[in-house]
Amino acid sequence: MELTEEDEFGMQKTTSRESDPMENERRSIIEDHPDFTVFDPSQIKEWMRSSDGASGPALPKWMKQLPIDKDPSKWTIMEVQIRPDRSWEVIKELLATVCMTKGLVLAAETPSSVLFRRLVAQDLLSSGIGKVSTYQNVYVRIGVLSSKLRVLDVACLVAADNNLLGGVVNVARNQLVEDRTLVWEYELGQLLGSIQSTIISQYLSLSHLFMASPENTSSIESVELDEGYVADVKSMFMSEMKENMRQVSIPLEEFAYEQEYACALLLGLLDPLLKKHQIKLIDHPSTEDTQNSDELSVAMSATTIGADSGKTANAVETEDKIAPTIKETNKEQEKSPGTSQCYGERVNAAVHRLWSQLQAECDQTVRQKIKEKRRQVTSRTESVQRLRAQAVNMIINSPDADVLTLKPSQRGNRDDVLLYEGSVIVSSVPAKLQVSYGYLVYRSMVPFFSATTTVLMSDIDQVVPTTALGIRVLSIVMKQSASTKSVTVAMGLEIDLLYQLLLEILSMRTQEPPPQSLASFVSQDAAVDITDVVDAVDEQDEAKCDAPYSPSAVDAIIAAEDAAAEQATLEPDSSPA
Image (cartoon, rainbow, N blue to C red):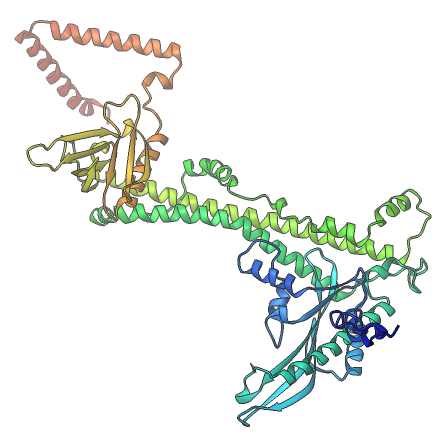
């Protein structure tokens, strides 16, 4: 039987690409290893969508700062878990050696990253004015994950740049350039394989920390973590601490801002009266405010997030990931002090001590900062509360203050002092409204049907801002024992200002001490005695009033007063010299 060419060489048309040795070699350039991860471009795109607001893990921060091309999905990225006791300078020199053997040279360098580039092609533009340069780019950075593990990220990209007019502009490429790009990308894939083999051969990956190697013996006593790793871990803890403090401070700042904004609205409403009576507000703490500071702190604590909640669970997960079997070994070694630890175990213990120390320092700093923030917010809130109450009190205590005109009022009475006057709509009826410390009075402005309604502030249960037909109104809810019904008040832009005034009046009346009688200052027995004395005095006054009027009695009283005056005049003269 004669075999066809496809059957003889095993190259069928449908599977020719899958059976191509070049394709198989390309897929097997980077070997499977637990310390090496090659990110899929689709996964990177999912991270990019999550960073834009979608749910899911966000794009790592360093991927947003890639050179050459800011789109991380175009890069081939390999992530390597590196030992924490290896110097970044040594790792950088090894990578530079591998890249230079492939023709790449150092183009840029930072304390934690390097960029290698190689010019592979330089073509003229169709206009002949400029040139298109194509580079192989290898970007390497070292850092730590959110789990505090040390990683080395290697990103490769083939990019064509247009250096015309000093700018870097991506240009379109023809099919020939696309075919050559596949070859250049294949070379970068081989470079990643070389980097992987170099890292493994030099025992730089994390898994080699607990494997048999020339240095993993118990004879080495000194264990030192890399300074760069320690600095990166400190930076990670600091960034997490700042994020936790920000999450805790936002509710406190919002609470303080709401109080300050409400105070500004109230002072804006009362500003004409303050200027009319030449009243200057002075913020000074009082005894009552000092006593209420603890209650305010307790109220604000409900809006805060505990400092301990800022601890991440990544540290626990990292412990299990970096040393899955070390915990039991450490327990056995604690029981038997004579047993010595190997090098990898001591490095692991040093890493955990570093994490614990930094976590304790960050927790202490967070607690101190939150205490300072709560103290600051408490002071700001107490200040605005004092200003609100002071503004109302100084107006109603002013001797020249105006009083209500819609009802009989008495000048000098605190409850009758006018605090606000304006035109409103009360329960769908136009009316004129006047607000004092003790009354809310409104008169309907309907011709021939005008009526005045007086509402006691003590009868108001609460004032609730709401909306009716898209219009913001105030719903004044009365107590069940009140004789008037609940009403709604609608007005223009001053609706928020009126709400703050009514809210402050109700708050001040609630905090006022109840009127105390004379008997409340003495004991019950003393109160009985005082009552008896008062009754006796009243009886004597009534007896005097009931006695008949006689001129002789009046003359006797006048004569007695004249005699007493003469005696007082003669006494200084009769005294011895």
